Length: 353
Image (cartoon, rainbow, N blue to C red; front, top):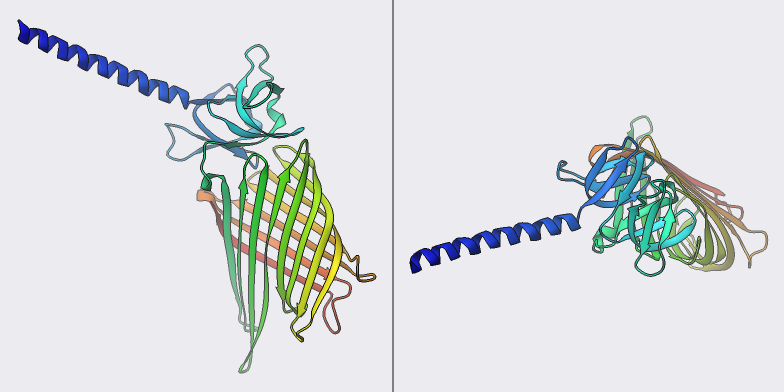
């Protein structure tokens, strides 16, 4: 009798442990389950990673990699974790999102701090999971190109890289652009170098305003620059932001230090600056970027500089892409026997991660 009792007790404990394990597993899975309702009323279940560049990423059990859907095809969503949320008419906030069962056209945003908000799906322009670690908030890409022209014995190598880090109130970016061009003439090799690197930090304030700080280093044989160092600080505003277009503007002051290749002297000046930056995406796998910077000198009479960048990318499978870019530098007082213009055009193949 005691043996049967012990056997029955052991089986009951095992059954209880199995039920408890299933209950805990189900609770954990349910807690991590997000839902995305599409325009055709299809529902995706999984873990939402974020929405950027007009594309929502969700990890599902029925896909080996993150499932990606166009934001314009999303009708609503429910999240179980906190997200960094950017609205078209409001600064970044941290909270969860749920569909309003009484008014399906609206979503309920529940901030970690503050009162609930109501927004339409098109009002949300950016999402990022806050539970991610540091490296999950970093986005980077690297690309390059190499060309050989037999007729002129020209070889050109370009390498570019950039990264960005985003959290609730800050966006930091960095970039590097290297160009090496060599032309063989008989036994002589003429080498032309253009290297550019820099960083940009934006600290977001209320509404669409932000404080910006940037540093840029340029070496250009075409403009006889051993090094140009530009450090700037200013204030800006996001003029347009939706899931397809971001348009930034900013103004401020800049310190410009130049060292030319044919001398040891440094030239220093104080400049004002004004800039416009446009990011456009979601156009059939194309992304566009353009930036115009104007630098009127405040300490050198009638001097004026302009920097213009344009970039287009076409997304390929496995996060690869092909693209083309153009850069133009203009200086109306570059120095004696130095070109006012310096420009680069390149086609590249790259990978983003």
